[in-house]
Image 1 (cartoon, rainbow, N blue to C red):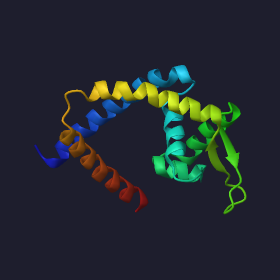
Image 2: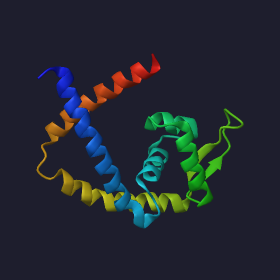
Image 3: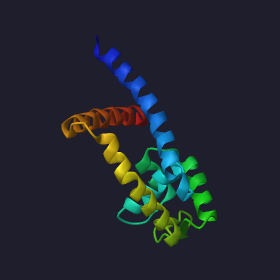
Length: 148
């Protein structure tokens, strides 16, 4: 099997796993008023070292800025995030979690932690690390191709 054939098989598995992961995530966080997409954005906000504008959140997630903006606007309408002034840009407000948003994120993480441990059961950490390294290289190459 060539490297191209092996990568094709990996990509097909990745597509299927991604779809199942999103469904799994949607079911996991639905009780907290979230979806996988909303949860990802809350995670990006919660884990960033400082508040960021939507464009930076989208970049960090590898997502389309317009899609992230739409979701952030929905979260804002629901009181899950708020906009703060950006000292570096008058129109690109910073996105911050509200108390309601932090509570939803923390509840989602509390539900996630035991479930991910159960999913990981029997998987060797070194195998998971190897898979992560392969995906990191693939991501870097795809980003370089996108930016070329």
